[in-house]
Length: 258
Length: 264
Image (cartoon, rainbow over all chains, first blue to last red; front, side):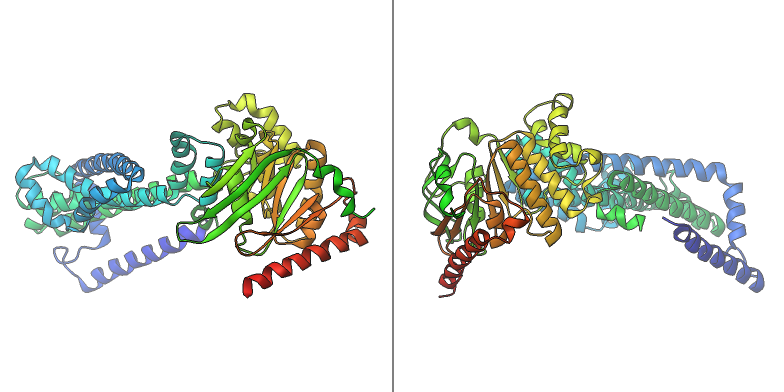
């Protein structure tokens, strides 16, 4: 990665912010219609205690859901990899969960579960499928020559799993993590919005709903900025993890190097 | 004495493994081998030559236990030979995430041996193929020829009595191929293992082998068998000798029959 990979988008972003700031100042647009970036920054500093505690709640749920989705996704992928019958039996349920919009499931979950748990389940449901499907694909994509090699040396099923199938599945698993990480945050936010609409919750999305009711538009933008930054941070961390683990041997890490 | 005539001694060497009336029919009905008979004799470098799809690779896979025959039997002179076979595939077939050392260590790891206990053998195998300085390198950082050397080191590491090589140098450029041919001959002299080699190349077959078996396109029928004096020096003089030309001509004729048979 070179300076232009970071520098160019950063320069474009700062230019857009400057344009936005200039436009708002020039046209004297009131902050309850469109706050200037400086007003949003002021709001972030002013409400930092409240916003950061909400951010921690949202990130906490996102992280928890992401970990559970990773463990369950990998476990189910391993189970499915053992037998075509299990795949036939279980995969339709996972796909059904994936294709049903989470925004439609969230209100129902809020009826049956405590708001905190409903948010957790929502975030889990959206993060789970990409991890499952990517890991399954990875486990099934082992090179035929390497399979023959392991058969030649009479490797046990366990040895094939540890020394061949899991490392082979690593690139796809990590791609699943990158998608799942971002989706866990989206799932948590969606569920918080649904919970917030019913007057429950303490996460960042709830702060947006609450600020909307009060027409506190700068706070809405401030919360939104924190959500975007969190999403970027999650993606960045998982992309870095992927690079570290695949560096030197996988084409995806090589593309980053070039 | 010509190269072809001078190979009587090795014809009498005991068979390491024998294929008796072996048939292999795939589930889609394709008959790869029918009533196939072959003795792999101790110490020889046997090359299976034939057009694509003639069943050469199937023979290797059957001997290595990677596939089962649908008819006939495979008989071993000693059962323990069957469990220690070296195999070099057409691609180097290396674990891309593992270093050269770890790739060569793999057969020992799968046999339950520790890294420390296996290190001398791994290093010895790497020294045989001239890769001792690349033990920590990942396969992607190696050239095609070096990757193939690594695969050969892995096949040698368990010190097998029988090594299968399935068109190992097909994807390499001519210069690398010639170099690896010479290296293989040197290894063969040093280690004495029996080699079953598969190739499309008449010249490679004539240069490396002590016996060439030319297979027909259909059912793997043996069209010709050419024995080559194992004591003959294999060097540049040999490549330009009359013996070499005679062997190539005879193998080419047999190969032409095989190909014509396929198109009629």
